[in-house]
Image 1 (spheres, rainbow, N blue to C red):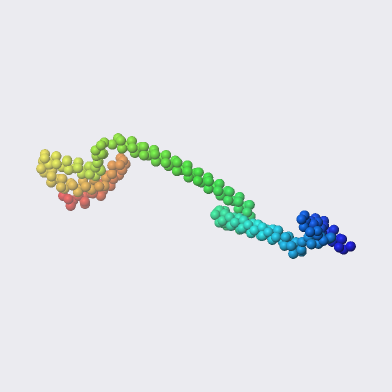
Image 2: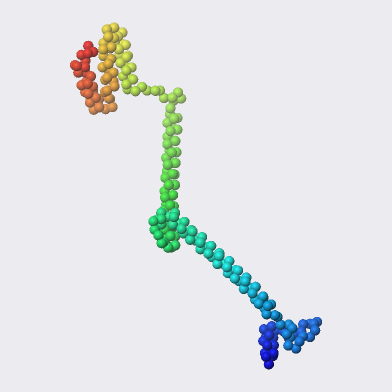
Length: 218
């Protein structure tokens, strides 16, 4: 009875058991010579298990690497965004939100700088155009040098002394006496405005035309 039960189980699990193969000698009545050994069954089932465990290990390793890269990325964002440097225990959602806000602010500042650069370039072009127009109006030989007020006054004084000396040689002696007084006037009196002229002239009179100052020159 036990033999029949075993044979029935093996025949249902392994249909080839109990049937003779074509061209081969007739098998045993129970077909036990065709039953696989336990070692072959274990070896055949162990290979898929080993492969499955290897794939699972690779999947876990890849997932750990992915999570590690994500954590490194969030830490990097926390060190780059100014509003996150002074905070601790920040969630990833808050980190992403602050990062987006910071990027938006940087984009706005960048646009403002670009607009400023464009405005300055246009201003430079306008200035270059104005300079070119001014240069075109200049004479080919250049602009004559103009003497400043002090040199012009000195030249006028010399011309006046020369013309008066030709009329009367005694004026030359007078020019020698008056020359220090003229030089002080020329260096002190300002003609930028009427008020400045009056103020500096009165000051010059007080400092250089008083009797104690004029007596030594007589």
